Length: 131
Image (cartoon, rainbow, N blue to C red; front, top):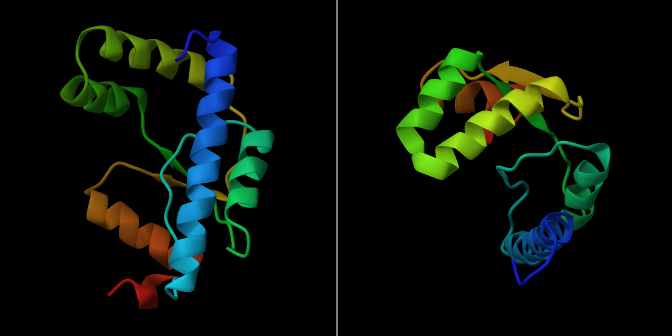
């Protein structure tokens, strides 16, 4: 990205994501939202704090989704191809070795997406707001 090193590019991407998230959250809050669901890879306490700062006034619940390696590889193969697939398969192996627990709780992602989402909503106490 923009001729930056991989590390600088990652930091810039995170900064942009967090700035955009802060603007979106401010607008949602003005419109009456009480919570927002954000899908992202949060792999450090520092990154968790960056996201939390972007969501000022929002109660943060970080949910880790887990699945066995075969399930993850199968899903990646359905979604990605070529270099992107290889990159994600390599990252899967690396992520398993350097995992940092930053989530409040984990849920096994081995069912239909609606079932997993329902379990998350129940666990965070938002089930009554889902309908």
